[in-house]
Image (cartoon, rainbow, N blue to C red; front, side, top):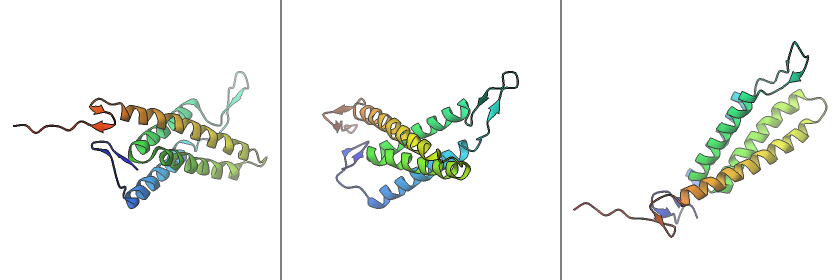
Length: 152
């Protein structure tokens, strides 16, 4: 059973809208990787010779912020478990596709497991906090929305 943010628990959920929202969430998750994960060059400090990368801090932070936003929006519109899976699985698949194409050692599979675990755990935490904030917002008593009286 879903939840309508304005009117409390919904008794029915349109399966077509749920599928559309889930597909959109998945597409935006993949788009996040393709937009922010393309710079995979190693950066070498000329003075020390230390290599860093392939992802820069700004790149990682922007990706995390985008994924958090997707999970928050997804959790408001969909069941939390579907929002988390709708972000984590497609993002990991997009990451894995690119990593497998550029890695000869086979270590991309280890990275894929770590990306999947990170997005699942992080997404679950974000979804739990989002659900808590939505349920405890002002104007709610015992899980029901306060009805507004008409002006006379």
